[in-house]
Image (cartoon, rainbow, N blue to C red):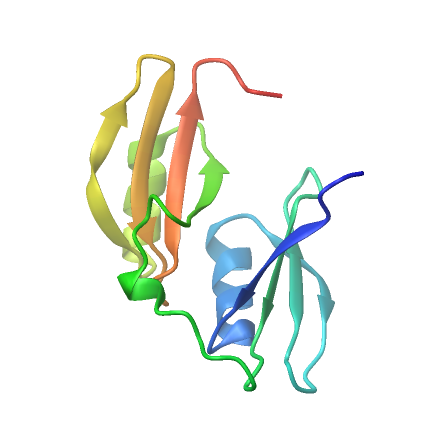
Length: 126
């Protein structure tokens, strides 16, 4: 078995998909403008996120979700430069860059308050 995707019910799947493609290096691999407005996004390795808006389900309070309970993690080469670019694009930081001894991490929130983690590992996990 292989994980295919992680799905998030969000208010603006099209807007989020556009932001994620412009600023996080994702690409749209499937889109539908009919409800629930699905967008499947993939990174260069094929990992996918599904964004959709299902009106039958209550939207999660992403702003109220603790970043340690839910976050999307993105590997980067330069955390500070990536942070600065994402903040300029509308993200907000949550804390400072933390050196874990085996790499660095930083939390942000995208413009829709979904928690994002930037990771620079000394040695990739896979």
